[in-house]
Image 1 (cartoon, rainbow, N blue to C red):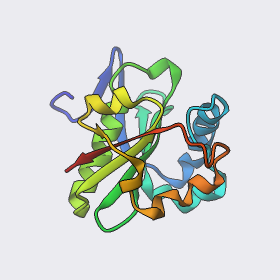
Image 2: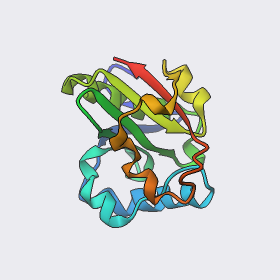
Image 3: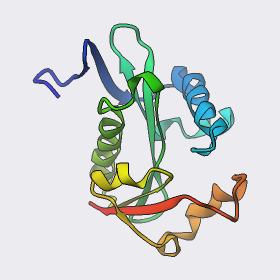
Image 4: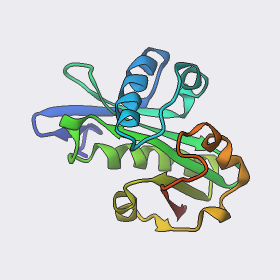
Length: 165
């Protein structure tokens, strides 16, 4: 990050901000693309409108185009989930995913959350950010509410990781 608070991707500058209602259809499309590949749980438009306050977006400052998304979902007294992390193909490998997770982590700490967890197919990415593998059984039961609607339930092959804040 440079001194003006913006992040730069080669010649592109992007901003991380809270999502708005106007972002929902873009979030839906990005998540659907990942869900079609089987690497992320898709979400309905209704679900996204209900949970828009959970999301951060990375937006290209010049074009206004969405480059990535990530959600912070409060689950229980001390637990929050990092969910729906997705970055457009052309923006991958440029620090946007990391910046989105860091924005969620900052908000979680400000809310008094002491543990963040993630269910993912790319554990190495989260391990680089300080998350450690953990048995899913230690996560609060409320976590599994979304899993019931997953096509892979009950044979989940995602890995769970956790980070103490």
